[in-house]
Length: 453
Image (tube, rainbow, N blue to C red):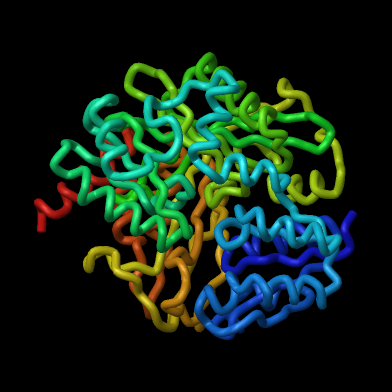
């Protein structure tokens, strides 16, 4: 096993990886910005190295500084978490040239699946259903208009190099296309360094279902069930995730899982990854994209599968074989995750910063909390507003939904605004309780809330 791993990330995921390393007997190195000097991940790690000033570009995304930290720490491997350098082939390639193991897929797999056009080609070659759309990136607004007319409105403009809900716009008619293409392309350029766009048929009110896969470096690839991530905000960013999907039948689960494995094997994928699908009202599913990293929502899969996905990332990177067959993967119970963010729901979910003066988290059977904050911690304006993930596990979905409501009621935070009051209402909405949700659910919920103001 590796003796020392550097975690090239911050926040709750850095804490999560550090704990997994320590459980495996591996020493850890944290990196941090000057604004994050008091973050829990810095104190948890055996060593820590400051990589720059407060902003992401000066610290966590400063390639030279992060690579220097890797070198001076003497780490044998690097876990990138999610975001930042987790899907940057250049980072993985640089580590390889330094003789440091990247805990993730190969450079070629990152390149193949990080480009949505190439990923779609891989899905087609793997006999995986895809959403009808452009063959590669639209070269211009005019090209996008031609594809939109061919496919039929509504269409979805999607950044080729996108993720996290950025660079996406729904277009309902030809008059909107030029304006929305410019907006989506500009956002994609600013976020990912590429303004290239795909044009796809907009599947109206689908469910967002993703398959977790694990693949070792010896040719074994398994799917570890599915997660439903349909509860998303208006910018396609996930709010609540659960495992398993409330409506997926065994035959569809098997077909979706096998399709995900085919895609992964086609690109020679290793380590943990997620293949995302859209599920329409008729039960048909379509390849959406593949995330070549651990997901924010991985804990719900861990809770129902009994597998520690982060530990398996490290074990696979260290050359271990998966000791399971597909038949060994059995899901039990139901888990739901709610993302806790430092945002003000009463003010259009604007970021909330300042010192947390009270942090009273729920703690009872079936509750897990992944976080990097505590009472006295100061939330800065420089990073993603997610400050915790509240995960509950029940014997079935009804039990998990009930536990989530109770846990949110017991979760009290003062000093900053959070989305907890919003979540308390959302998870008690009749449609959520019944599992009757789609990617349009939150939009309808928000309209109902505004109607009662």
